[in-house]
Image 1 (cartoon, rainbow, N blue to C red):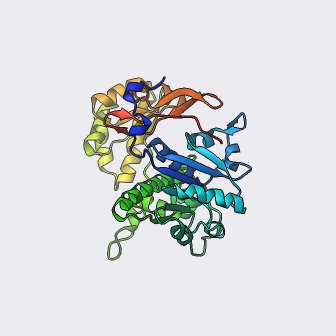
Image 2: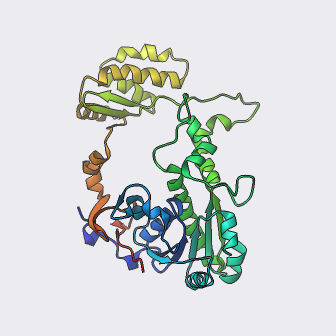
Image 3: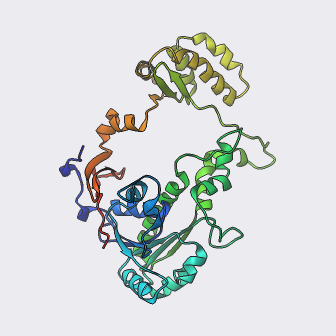
Length: 369
C-alpha cells in the first residue's frame, strides 16, 4: 500500500524544513533521533568513518545492508570522513559552519579528543545547537565505560523488575529508542530557545538519566513516599494475556466496573465473592486472570474480542507482527508503505504524527556521496 499523495505534506511544508543536522553517531539511539528529525523535514548529514558505519552490518542484512541500519537512517546523506586527520576534521568543520544542529553519541573522552566537546564547538560555532548522548554521563565513576541498551536496563532496575526468578532484559532495544525520543525533544527545545537568544546551546543527555526519568512514574512508585510512609515492595501483577482456543486475548480491566464486566463476559458473576476476599490488587488480578483463562480457552479470539467489546472491557487479540501488518486498524491508519529503495522494494513506516490532517512523507532513499 502506498500513501495517497494529496494527503501527504510536501517536504518544503514540514516544520523543520531548512534545518540542517550533522549526525556523528552509530547504532540506534542518536541515529534514530536523526531519522525523526529527517521525518520532520530537516536535512540530516550522517558522518561515518572512512570504512563506513560498523552498524551497517548489524543483524539481518540484505546485499550487505543491515535492515535496522536502514530503518534508523532513512533519508539521510552520508559523508565518510576520518575525523582524526586534518583533512577529515576540516571537512567536518565545513559541514558545521552551515549546520543548525550537531548530534553525537561518542564516549566523552573520545569526543574531547576530537575537539567535539561543548566548549570547543561553542567557541567555533556560537549558533550551533549541540546534543550529546552518553551512556552514564560525561563524568563520574562509570563515564568512560562502553554502554549498550541491555547494560542500562541492568543498571536502572528495569531488568530486575521483569521477573522474580532472574533479571530479564526486554527483547526490543527500548533504552535506545526512548533515548532517541529525548534527543529529538532536546533538539526541538533548543531550536525554540535559539529563536529567543540567537545563540546555540549544549544539551548533554545520559541514557542512565533518561531511563531513570522514564521508569520512575510506575517503577518508582514504591520508593516515592519517604519515611514516615511505610516502605513496601510492589510486585508486578500478572499480565492479562489469556489463552484462547486459537491464540491469546489481552484483557486489561483497569476499573472495578471492568472486573465485574469480565465476570459477566466469561459467565461467572459468582466469582465476585472470591475476588473480594483477596488482600491486595496484585493477588486479585492474578486470581481474576487464572479464573478467566479457565473459560477463555473454550472460544476463539474473535468471539472474545466481540464479547469484551460489547461489555466495554479493554481487550484485543495478541497479534504476530505479520498479523499486525494486515490488521484492519493498521491498514486504516496507513502506518506502512511499500516503496522502491536503494536495494529494491522496501517497507517503510511513517512518522506517527499527522499535521493539519496530513501525513508526513516517507523517503527510503539516502545519498551516500
